[in-house]
Length: 578
Ligand code: NFE
Ligand code: MG
Image 1 (cartoon, rainbow, N blue to C red):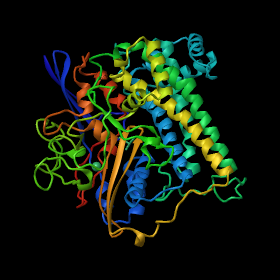
Image 2 (cartoon, rainbow, N blue to C red):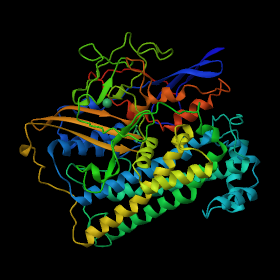
Image 3 (spheres, helix red, strand yellow):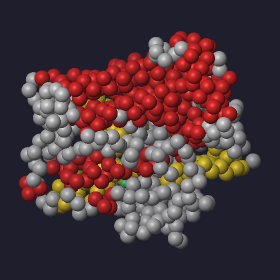
Image 4 (cartoon, helix red, strand yellow):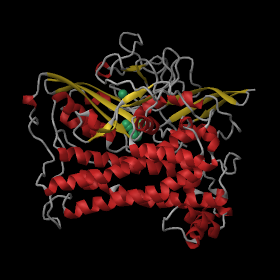
């Protein structure tokens, strides 16, 4: 029997995503990923002072609150060959690192866990047995029978009142849920703890950047002064007490990752080992990283913690270099998107020459029934040398693993050994989810090192965080162009800027979720979500939990992915939110 399944909107993500799947004989034969809401930032950059852009483009997203600001200042610095002080580089690493740890823990508990954890089943759990289970897995101190009994009582109040609140609308009782009630209760307790924890650790951004979300940035470094004075005498939040706060936050991050996030990932993964296997989100098998976390500056990729490069067809023995300036490498195609290029062709445009002009017949796209044979998304289709590539935690972990990063090798090997799985198991929905957990450990630990280095510099008398040598646009060349790239939590992110006479002549952002969630291209090659959904067995077309598991394993952010702007400022569509 053939069926068409529509999930719209996909919830527990940022932005508006619709998935359509054609099911033949119980399996997904083809899937279509559509970004259904358009919003916009890129075009309003044109004509502006390049030094102001970070504040505009940072509003592309409120989830990855920092990354578009950083990609933007890096793009301008790259265009102008503007060097920044080592302290600014370390603070940027710390802030991006904090974004990873915060995002990934929140994704696991608040956006993805309920695909695996049956909240209602937690009511059947024995709090004492839950306590024993928790203590067998971890030294996390919140593990007493009384603690779990309290969480269960809170949950029971929700259920008895017919108000599941934040837990409403799950597919509770679906046979795809495999955890015993005690494991479900433990995960629900940690879901609630993670809410409290994330509020505390978000403060790191506020110490260095004044606030969160959307901390302050500056072209040429970081806008915070640093001082070893105390008690506010220095007039900066980055004084002795601010630095102590940062040290405490890094410690809190590391202990939550070690005591809660990693043990929970391993425990849950152990019940879903089939989700490490074929037919469970293995995807297209091409992976790309731009690389990030420089030890010796953005201009020295050999010093990056995460190397850049492309892995094709799962061949871990060979890494292709990626060149973000080359016309024929990074390109965006629009054959299947609601855009058209000025020449009417779909040859693929490099972002320096990127265009964003709407094209669909009628007043708005056919949202009720996507025209999947033609155009069906507000996302473009980015390609590397014409090929779709997956970006994000799995790409980074494979890159670190295959280039011999010792801690990653040890973490991956230990995890696979414990679950009795081969390396190929990583190419899967659960592999993607586990990779995210493991990279959080790597980045969280690296943060301690960056912090120590920052303190060492300050103690040696280096307080410099900002370089004013190129601040004046009259010193700039008449024409310049540059790219700011980074590894955002969801994957490779690039902003490209063309500067003419001190103003922005063109600006394009190509974003991780656009790489992963983009539609097919003119050669009919599916994007990574679409490829990963193919082949799933769907147990119940009315409760397609299999689709949610795999799409969520990418951590979609469609606000990031669709970020263009209607230059005529017309209303493009109306979204009804129920
Ligand atoms: Ni809106 Fe983002 C990250 C960026 S998305 S979350 O990480 O860039 O793909
Ligand atoms: Mg773009």
